[in-house]
Length: 329
Ligand code: Q46
Ligand code: ZN
Ligand code: ZN
Image (cartoon, rainbow, N blue to C red; front, side, top):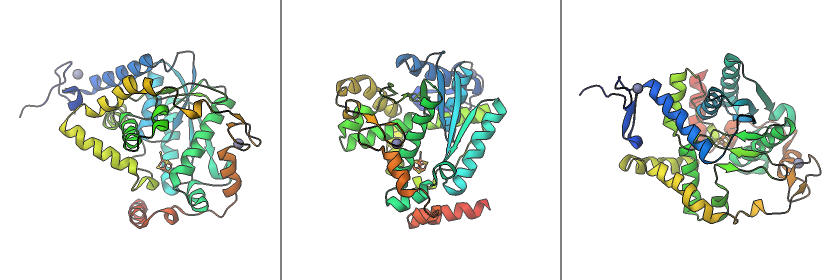
């Protein structure tokens, strides 16, 4: 079989993208990624070159790739890393995020949940007896919003890619969760003390982002968060990937056509956007009650004896986590 060739320049290809029915060399893969990000930004009026941007950085491929892409395209973007205290996973993620920023002379702000708020994600999960991702998501959303407002940033950027958004859409559709569907937009406008939030990677897949990082020499955290094990989100991604294999392009059509055709029909059904908000009596963040959910969580779990990661994993997840930990030691 002859070596596959880049669709643009006919040089040897490094990746095949069945969704585009084409192969690409390194240079033209980068060009495709840049163009898809530019298109997402333009189609949804996400960013302007005057904006001060805060990128939510986890140390994984997507957040580092979006930071890299925006910087390369000429946007002014700082990063914020939140240390979640998820054992070795968090330690490694923090190193990747810091090294990326240092090597490029970019500004990375950092917040450590345990140092600054007296708890971490495993401890919060154990004390509240809720799934770790619930305390984690709540903490991250609050801290990114706060940091953006306190630091006078115009917008928070997240690295959610097409696979992430399609998987969330799939879950919301399976349950016909209209309220979540109405909120699943590439841009959430600023309102009442919340910053604007945008997702410039909605037209790019996980595989394309991994390829971007490899070609650009970005050393990212490859391991999944141990708390994600057995997560429904991963099952939805697998389901969509098997549909995509049979019918390339389905994933992009599912999500992007939702945004174009369905989301406008749901506008106005987003209750959270219309509810009455007031300032939290502890931190001043917008909330519907007296105290915001973050401050209530902090009050409940702060100062509690730290709980190790393995204590909040189910049996299969714990076995996988301990094996990875042993291999890394
Ligand atoms: S970091 Fe946090 Fe994710 Fe880990 S605990 Fe869940 S939400 S899986 S993006
Ligand atoms: Zn080429
Ligand atoms: Zn509060």
